[in-house]
Amino acid sequence: MDFIFIEEMRVDAWVGIFDREKAAPQTVEISMTFGVPDAAAQNDDIGATIRYDFVIERIRHELAIRRFNLLETLGEFVVSLLLEEFGAPWVKISIAKIGIMKGVKRLGVQIERSRDVQK
Image 1 (cartoon, one colour):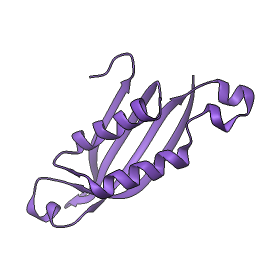
Image 2 (spheres, one colour):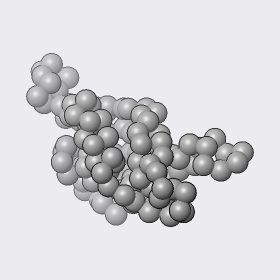
Image 3 (cartoon, rainbow, N blue to C red):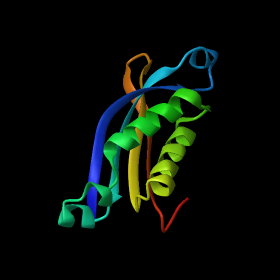
Image 4 (cartoon, rainbow, N blue to C red):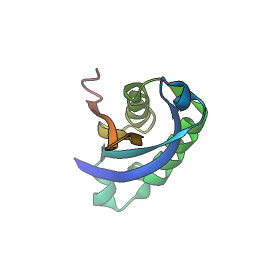
């Protein structure tokens, strides 16, 4: 299996349980790796792969309009997009809030799923 990775994508998202987090979107950092069909590289065909530009655009759009209490839920949503909408066979994602607590650079979650064994 071949993989595409996107590292340290920053996006504004509505996520959190505290009043200060619900008052405005906050920047989160998303890194992800997802499987793509081997046929894309073998045939040099953009139509046979998952377009990372479409993935980035879709995630940015959805996170601008949706609200999440937990990073875990936000992560599961993004994983579901990749598995179900984009057809990735396997996804690993990390999502972090940046500078949310004093003395902590980032805090977040990591999730790994495949279409064969979800949850």
